[in-house]
Image 1 (cartoon, rainbow, N blue to C red):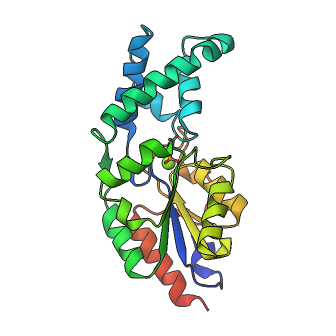
Image 2: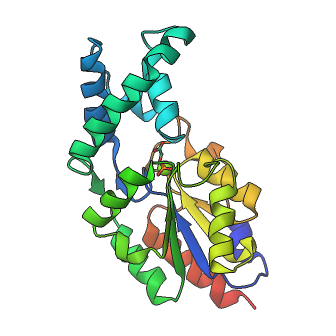
Length: 236
Ligand SMILES: O=C(O)COP(=O)(O)O
Ligand SMILES: [Mg+2]
């Protein structure tokens, strides 16, 4: 946080915001869809806590992790396509039904928009899940650009989607802040050369957010908006 506030720097012009674990608590949706898929294989339900550990690196990683509870590597690959198809069907059927906005999300987005910041959403969620979810939760109007985990050849923690947003906005990475709940967001931002703020309330593979290298931990998007505003007031 010290770095972020005190560095003499050009103003921040855009913010890239993560979806799962940062704007929406989607864990209950994952839980319902994963256990419905597991039921089709005759596997017992697993807990939300177990699923939370496997969220963050996209659907393929999640499905492989879930199948690995009952299968060896060959079994995982053998069942992967069916498991993914079952899971996608279940997820799309309930997408958003059990998910809720975190406190301060809309107010934070409003504040950033009022300050003239351009907004992008970069998620590892498949774009076919992300687009209707953003619309359903009233988030879509805030974002000029949305990239899902399958929108580009590489996903977070690769910097590719963040660099694509910088190119879309014609901004240098140093004029852009990423906000996320996990090490994937922070590593992608660092590799892209963007600033990064993290939130402590999401899913970080079971690790405390303090263990993740960032420019600051913010308790809400409102706090993030205030930090960016104060940075910009000091910037030249
Ligand atoms: O779908 C995931 O694995 C995580 O999605 P996120 O990038 O929005 O946190
Ligand atoms: Mg996330």
